[in-house]
Image (cartoon, rainbow, N blue to C red; front, side):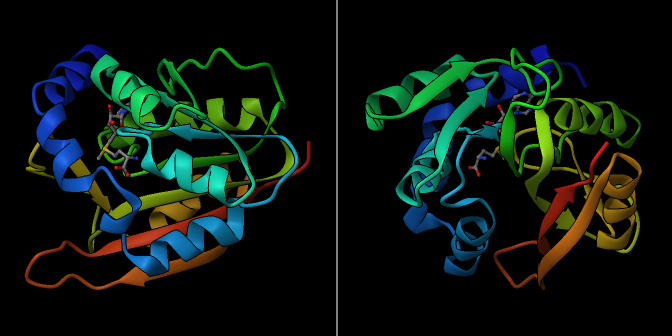
Length: 202
Ligand SMILES: C[S@@+](CC[C@H](N)C(=O)[O-])C[C@H]1O[C@@H](n2cnc3c(N)ncnc32)[C@H](O)[C@@H]1O
């Protein structure tokens, strides 16, 4: 899956996505608390990678983080800037960030690495490691299943992961899991997990 494909797919549904998912009130309170607990109040930049409408970037800012939203979809960046004028939102890809080595103290990748084919995940995690300082925390929101498998996400193909396997990938990339929050699916929602991991030294 290329960045251009992601951009095209999300651009075509941006208005609907914003309406359905674009505020913090539409996010589960336990998820908001998890994100705040791991990424709030840190001195230094926190990157919200694949920020979409920008509501979680704004949530991080309200939790005292110097949060910057990054997304490949111009419609999302324009919306985020207009809706959260105090915030910083930039157009860019998480695959190649315009960020110096060891700069960020945190990363949020909420529902945004889900579209990466499993073979492409390690390179993106290596980029996350490059831009983070030792001790930084990365928080992920992922879909969960018994095995790594593609599924028909409403916007474009996405992948579900056993949390333990996702966590192993994090460990291989130099991030040690410190907490996970697993929510079983129900009629309206797929099984989901929040995973927080700390960047190792070195
Ligand atoms: C399911 S949405 C999640 C958006 C937001 N984090 C949220 O929780 O509502 C996935 C987002 O990831 C973005 N995305 C996917 N691949 C990306 C990449 N390589 N670089 C930056 N953003 C990307 C998409 O444009 C989209 O905004």
